[in-house]
Length: 380
Ligand SMILES: *[C@@H]1O[C@H](CO)[C@@H](O)[C@H](O)[C@H]1NC(C)=O
Ligand SMILES: *[C@@H]1O[C@H](CO)[C@@H](O)[C@H](O)[C@H]1NC(C)=O
Image (cartoon, rainbow, N blue to C red; front, side, top):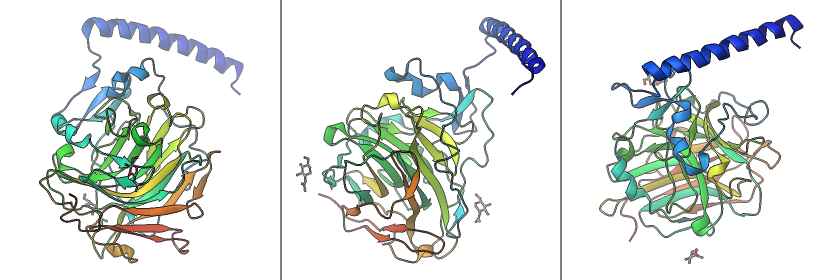
């Protein structure tokens, strides 16, 4: 409880701040010294007024009220601990925070190249893949009648060798719907020269509401994802990637629905990056019905399938393989559980990749999957 005096003082203070604000705004409008965007050539991102970020060009996000942090930080996804399996690979190490009221938005290097990704046809109902350009090695829930509110994993951070016209990623999918009504949120790492103009391993997100038909995009390339963190944002490169037989690096990624707002929050290493508002979905508005962990690769028609994970077939030796561990999900009542008791299965779309499941391992970790492979002359 605040004392009466303090409350009066705070009232005065608020009044003062409010009047200052309106003065400031009036001055700002005349002299335009308040810029909605702060650009610098030496950075890969621009700092943008949080209320003028690309997300709000989405027609369903007019008058959107920004949620600055999730309501669940105290009770869900909070079992954060260091792990003996690997060191955390950091993002945004060299960068400063954007000024107050601004958020970082990655500059778009090659917008025209986005079109080639709009043909994904991953059929999440029967886990078939009718697009020979994309291949998968995933571990997925097997029913779509169970309610989930999110998924989380430690993902090993790798740097597979990928050319222009290919990408290779490892991620978490949280989904609902089927066929052309598939709604999907994805987050993990990707090496994607077309998207990023380099071969770094970068934090990469994706969403669609019509099975990658007319909607959907990476990071903040199209309106939808609301960035709130002043420094950490999709598109940032990871500081370190795993060394075969040596130091392993991991990242802790979760996609979880907020019980109050219904928005889907992205957390990386326990930091709130931003969220996909419930308003951009029709099905994920309420809940999710399945999730997946694993690798996805892409190649255009002239290329072979690229390496997935660290480019090797999976093994039990975590120093020599790509992996997901501490895989968890969020229940209908927003508590977090290990995935081990859930009915789950693996899906491998091409023999150039594989995935192995290790449950109830005890020791330093509960569960893990190892996955990956060299790729090769895939598809039709
Ligand atoms: C999976 O679903 C698609 C779309 O309905 C269908 O074309 C395909 O034949 C199905 N595959 C299997 C193996 O059932
Ligand atoms: C991680 O990478 C940075 C440079 O990006 C390097 O200075 C640091 O030594 C690396 N950490 C480890 C544990 O290898």
